[in-house]
Length: 507
Image (cartoon, rainbow, N blue to C red; front, side):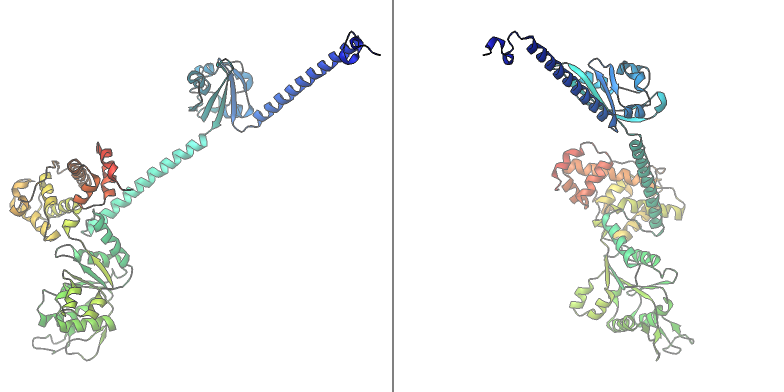
């Protein structure tokens, strides 16, 4: 038997056993070293394969290794940087700051944007993230920095900003051109309601549909008719206008439809074409169409249906090609119900309806309208007068039953009856003066550009309303605009404390 002390399995004193054991241990150690080297090599390959730059330091910021991507991005070789500190590279002016140093100081992950300030990559823009790695003792033993070239991204961002600036510039120029065109057409559009009217008018101008413009007296129905005609394909043709309520009934028929020679006493020997014929290839504007007598309503309906007119005393119909735009300050539907206006004519005229709101419902237009009217009057009479802010405030408080026509008359009367260059509240008509309760105090200068003056006034009005009512919703209701308009303009003018009023917005 083999004793336990001499059993090779248990070792004992057999030298052969110790030889075998030593060789096994050496083999295991060699295998562990090989495994470690293989894993280290694979890790090195992984780091080298990264498209992003990898920069690793020890706990004191000394560079231990970098990969090829870091060399490519930063323009420095690993032979140069390994062994140096991250701070040294900053001090030597190779780049503006170090993510490794920032991470060591903050003891947490740090991301910074830096720029290469030296070497072959001067101007290169880089995003670097430094990540500290802590040892068992809580001290930082390594910092791994991930580096990415963002030069192209930053350049694209800069190009985008430049493009946005150009877009804003072009938009401003187009807006200026549009405003100049509107001003040329004697159209002032500042309020959303007025702008909506112009949008509808521009849309229907593209077709030949019959249009009925409604609204109170003096709101600018004729101006909208002009606007539609100018935007239409008939703009090169004539725009003929007639106020159906201003011409006696016995003359209105001959004015509209014309007459043949000898049709009645006093008629011209050669006869006369009517306004429908004169508007050939153009537009005929029938203002106050609700004033048409019943017999002429029948004849107008026939023209709209058959596109031909029959002159007074004539036997042969004459084809006509004129677009019809009518306007009224009356409720034609109610007149039709009362039997004062033909229903078939009403529906013929009202193919497209445009309702112009009264001035009291679009008060945002008042400052610009007032300054525009003043400018025309100054030019007409060669004056250089200007309105005080208190006058504009009073205008905003007044209800304007006569609408724009009343505003024009009031301003002209004040200008021609005032010797002073500055027109103040003392020159206001008593009806407006007694209705003024505004506390807004704005100073206008005659040298101030029109747009700047309007914006200045608008800012003060919104600021006053917010201060008084403490709510964007209430301020919008009083100023007759959408709540979003108050919020947007308050932000535009940087009104202090406006955030306090935003909590009442319904999302």
